Length: 147
Image (cartoon, rainbow, N blue to C red):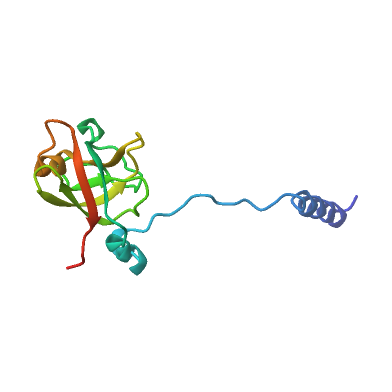
């Protein structure tokens, strides 16, 4: 067998070997950085929704340092919250129905999934509302107006 026939045979086998295989798919999702945030993600911070009333719970401080569903690092000293359906980054005013105090938090995580629970609050947000001792309280959430 001559060199040319050998090379032609190797080339043909190589080309035909990959013909029936699908091309690889990259399922890795890239998260946009804060510097490259789209106008749509910025607008999500002021999403319109109907006010809701329910029970707010205190999120455990043991979650500090872990990643949230939005990709941020959880910090119990920030004014943040978890909600089942509101978009990440949405600003929400939470009003304590017993005392009338309110605080503005940002949705950074998903949950709580217990029936009857409306929103989960970090320790700082719960302290500002005055529900950190009971670890839960009746609240109303309403959209925060852009300033």
